[in-house]
Length: 311
Length: 298
Image 1 (cartoon, rainbow over the protein chains, first blue to last red):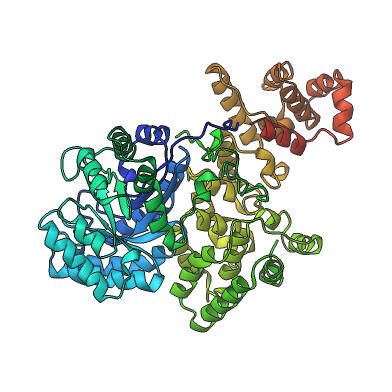
Image 2: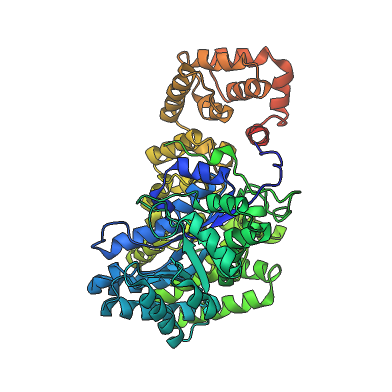
């Protein structure tokens, strides 16, 4: 059964969301709200892992099961691969995880090394951050930087300093979790500035609107970072709606809630608008000749009912 | 099917077919990786090339000439490389360049690949089962593949793949068919289905049909293929019920099942539909046709 051509609808990308922790209700609501593509950065799971094999299974789920789960709801799932800063502090384990990373970093749909950076800004965090910057450079992948929640301003500056020390071009680096205090320097130095919209802490949608008003849409990216904590998987479409209400121009909404993320992460060569604009469901046993034909009105792809799994 | 003394022609077929349909730089890359894997013999070189093939090959359909297709068939009957993608073919090519000294090391290497693979990589690995070395070592892995809930991965084991019919014991085979039914997969794409039909499977399917009917749900009509040769006095009433369906295709499927049976009542029932019987006898009405029709309606 094919879904008939839908009217042209607004499309969003949530370039930072930990959907592994979310329910199918969330997926359904996200798709309904116009989210067509998401990026799931490798992160910690709320509790530190104690075995390298746990990381292996986690990374595998990011390129396997979660991709499939998202697809069932018509959402294209990409991910970033990396060792997060919190777990970098378990050095013997971190060494083993570093050996796993090259196995995943080159995979299809892996759009960056991330989220990496500093948490408590320890020596161990610094060591593994640097090693992963080198990996990103070697793989020619963008980097997604998680800036620390404590001592944020200094940590953000240091993240960029170290990245430059390792020879990464600012346009290949997305600095996430910005706020009013960090945004200016990040933009001035030529980086992508991502903002995580949290219901209670960090950034709220209202503050986001003010930032777009002040700085314009260039290199600014809105995301939800929704995970296992209190967070909102609809933060991107909700912020877009608030921007509209507050008189932000349509083009600025499109850039901050869709296009900039696409431009930044498609530098990996692993993310393409056609992945979701292509309306035909993919059947690997079917000949693919007609597969790249765009249907009228840029309708996102919807999978057939047989892709929905009963357990 | 491959035997130890038969030379595996698959990697040269893949290379020559790919050369005709992809950009030259992709073939150059493939040659470089082959060289690297052969020289170093390192697992990691092979793993990274296997993943990064997606940067040089697309999911376009992999075209084989008639001669090439025939060659694959004489090596392994039922191998459907013509349904692969170019990326899948390139990955299988790389897989065939990695030489493991013995079955244990092959199994270990493949285990790592499977455990760290993304969806498309895992699909490529399962579709390569019938052409890989030490393939009899992979029965457990293939059974593991059936436990997935990712449709495309399940399909890579169960559909258009001659491996299960050759290597699965009856319980694994039945598990596969039953799960394919449960997942509503196109059963006509299961290779060599007739040769592996068995009474136990027919009984499982009858029980399944009763369960579905009790819940007011339908059963996919291709299931009757697996019951046909085992129609008996107990299950005949179920077949009869389906021949009275409002759905023409379903009626055709039940009568086609009757044509596979020696049970006198089933033969008699089929004779009472002379028009359909003649279509069956002439080969117009067959399981592939039924399956294609059902798939088009899905």
